[in-house]
Length: 320
Image (cartoon, rainbow, N blue to C red; front, side, top):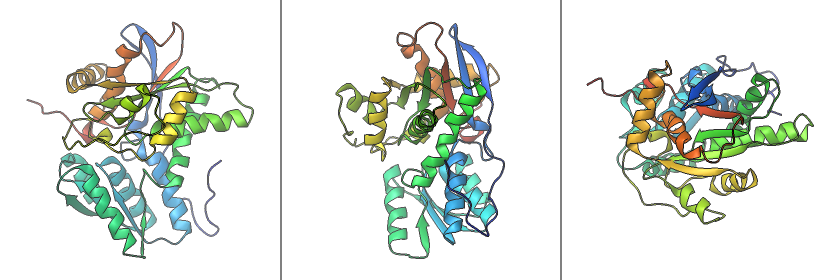
């Protein structure tokens, strides 16, 4: 179900995958946290990046380029270093310092771009279009990245005793996390291993809510927003998501939902999780913050899995 390593190449890996599925209780309801913050670079992006870098190595790519709020850039810088590739990572100036430092320590070229996230994306694309020696290794665009994200679904299925959860909840920017999980369960269904698929719940953070409006109006595509405001949940500060059509289709087919949380709810959820020994960045905390809104949709006894996508040290709160 995944691309094979090219002949004559060794697998490029740092032991990614098989993150814990932690049982917990949140507001009186049982929930499982998929702890993808425990990946080698501290974020779920390692699933897709590991597959993508192996694919690109098989094509003899020597320089990879990406734009990122931090997590994807750090992951690509890490796996590129492991593969002996160069990495050029374009990040908005507002990206959290720990994420920028992580990109740099792996030896990548860190290019900080003024303005909103889309400015970094435009520059990264322009560089690869004018330099044939580079590959645009975008987590939002590259198909091999999405293939790697399917492994999250397969792990959840096995960790639940080969059962399909009723709900998968995830922070949503471009939509790759949920879409990867959806396709992973679809593969299991096509293989005859499961007979149903989970509901999907996409969580967005104010004011970046393009999926909310589209879902409420049953649109096929989102309307891009004009938003430039830095937010704590920087990983999903996306005003024009790339995978909008495919994710909206999956949300409708799964009889899922989209919800939005605000800054106060996110920071409160982050602190509550930490008081339970689970330290995640604000982007991940959106999942816990959204559970209250989802109570009316989740039937008693249904199995709920929330994907915690990034470690708290990625974007820690001010200790004051």
